[in-house]
Image 1 (cartoon, rainbow, N blue to C red):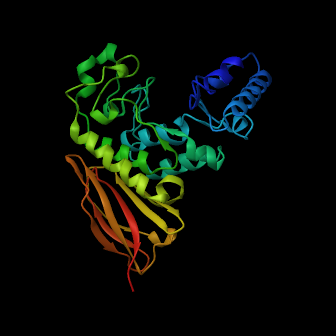
Image 2 (image 1 turned 135 degrees about the vertical axis):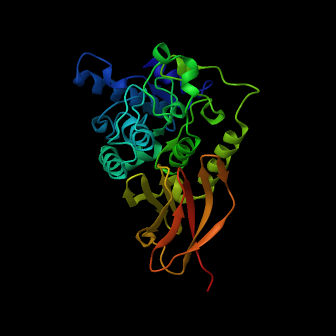
Image 3 (image 1 turned 90 degrees about the vertical axis):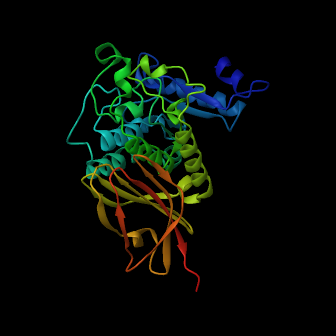
Length: 326
């Protein structure tokens, strides 16, 4: 407890604690919960703004009642469902599941269940990662290849990767409820199998500058759009290789569409469900695809409460709603 207090206090003023495998501490559940309650009391007394963020797999609800952790590393309600939908790959690249690859219905059902196990404020602060130090790089997972460095070799981690799926993952990371957390090098195009291959040196002087710029555009869109930071989320469309969801808060509304397959689709998205009715138009602020991205704006009028749009293969789109001038 002295250590917990020390580092969040002056002169150190750490922003908080990230707790490794926090549910495993102690020899009983009773002791575990007692310890984290005391830990929270000490930390918050020293620095009420300090965050207490735990690594956890599975249902975190008994720790997130407001008396222990603030939130979690978000495997169950972000990393895993996104990885299954976009790539069909388990987060270590240890298995491929064709039933989950491109399964929009499974994506939303999984997200809804696991998000329901957290309080709203815990969801909004959850660490939403595509990659980290324990799992394969998300860019490598887009090759849909089962393997590790010992079995496939390091070079194979960069073969057959799909930048359209990678960019779609980043679009979802920046538009889904939670706190986007970029594992160093993801923004620069680093590949790698699971630990330890995922810990490659940052590619100084050899960065993928286009990907870095893409991340900068997306973080800017998130900052400028209140709905993406704190808004509610609503499923709008789910099918094979396709999802669409809305984010909304007050007058701020946006729509995200992701096509995880190679075929072009023509869609009718019921945007009236987030309050974008006739008299609004949806302004496309980001189109990402396999070869790159386009941040130019295109305007789509809302007709009969629907957005009519054609979405190319491996495309992901962000649209912001604007009320038409009378």
